[in-house]
Amino acid sequence: MTARKAYDDAKIKEDSARLTASQDSFTELWNSLKSTFPKLFGEATYKSWLSPLAFKEFTGGRFVIAAPTAFMRDWVSTNCSKKILELLQSLNSIVLQLDIVVDKTLKIEKILATTPNGAGASISSSSSFVEGEVIGSRLEPRYVFENFVVGQSNELAHAAALRVAESLQVHFNPLFIYGGVGLGKTHLMHAIAWHIKTCHPKRRVVYLSAEKFMYQFIRALRFKDMVSFKEKFRSVDVLMIDDFQFISGKESTQEEFFHTFNALVDQNHQIIISADKSPTDLPGLEERMRSRLGWGLVADIHPTTYELRLGILQSKTEQLKAGNIPVSVLEFLAHKIASNIRELEGALNRIVAHAGLVGGAITVESTQQVLRDILRANDRRVTIDEIQRKVAEHYHIKVSDMHSAKRTRTIARPRQVAMYLSKILTEASLPEIGRKFGGRDHATVMHAVKKVKELMQEERSIGEDVDLLQKMLRS
Ligand code: ADP
Ligand code: MG
Image 1 (cartoon, rainbow, N blue to C red):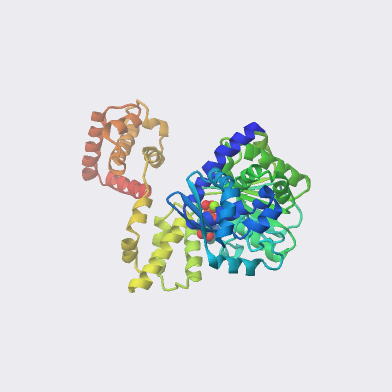
Image 2 (cartoon, rainbow, N blue to C red; image 1 turned 90 degrees about the horizontal axis):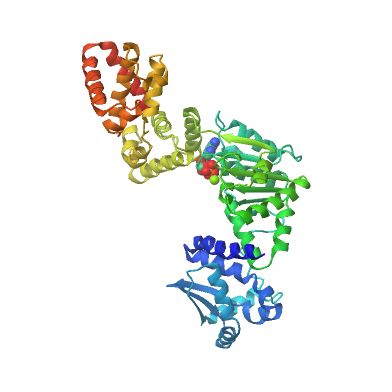
């Protein structure tokens, strides 16, 4: 228990620091804290004194709450404020001081809002667990199966997601979806939730990020609310945890999740997890957790292909009613922005917005202008390894020949070409290039670069080879 407590205290601070961004998050902090007051101070005290309190603002370390009357303010100041401040500080270390002010308008509002049962029903816990609906985090309306474009890179994950969404039986548990940033994991998870919500409204689905799971867990620990925490998560039909990698290395959260996981699997309830890596590659996972995660179906989403990117752009332009964008522009974007789909979408939105504001036709040239920064960031950085691979392939020699001491022409010439391309396509210095070619010195590289330049003038075939390789490497 003490280990948990220490974990609890340290982590709660770390994780609540994230909540400091805006007044909204302070409202949320206040509301979640307040939902624990009946337990902490007793139902009677809560009803009489605490339920009307409202969050006002947070400035310069001062957490300001309001009471409806001076009398109430004084009572709360004397009897509860020390404890409340402590709790606030434990949840968010940037809170230095608690001030209670009087706000007369508050009274009327709260009384109106709370009259039916007088118990401050207008204050709800910020915990997004709401019985009987899709609980956990808010679902993005756009993230439905209809808007998900399927291609080679994501067809397995898509098929698995669809199967889980449509089926009332559990075929694989858990379904584990993994892949890089912005490739559609969250989209698929939300799509499953929407589908179930629509087709099987009675099934209880919880979707939330691993971070939020942890936050709720430590809050439950903190406020000795573990029973209801366990109940909440163990009574769902489908539990979805997004960005599971967040749990890596967080032992207590992992352990709690492990228990939840087992309880759900035992009841034959579905679990769906997403992460940026496969269970085998996720660092900081307990062994039993890792093996459990691999029990079901592990589906990966690969980096996008050009065709998928183009397909997504076409589908998005329809959604945006931006049919006036020439195909050449879409092709240009699909070609240039290969990093991820989020960025691709962002680029499209930007050119549509720009055209809407400034007017004028959308062309490849205008797109290049508007997206200068994104395009520069996406300019593919060619690596020396890639150059060696492509050149070796082109000349039908082994990649290892790039590093070898062999000096026969059929090998030395391609090696020189690769050195030349490394010089013009990467930022590497001559000595760095030399090291990558089996530890040659910079003079050798310099000589190779000069030699290839000459040969390109003298022999047309070499010039063509180099041009072709350069094009392939740059695309
Ligand atoms: P991840 O969770 O893997 O980081 P997201 O699910 O948030 O990625 O996807 C990033 C953006 O790309 C979202 O706006 C999503 O709608 C879009 N997107 C991803 N994959 C597809 C797809 N196959 N078809 C259409 N849109 C997609
Ligand atoms: Mg995501």
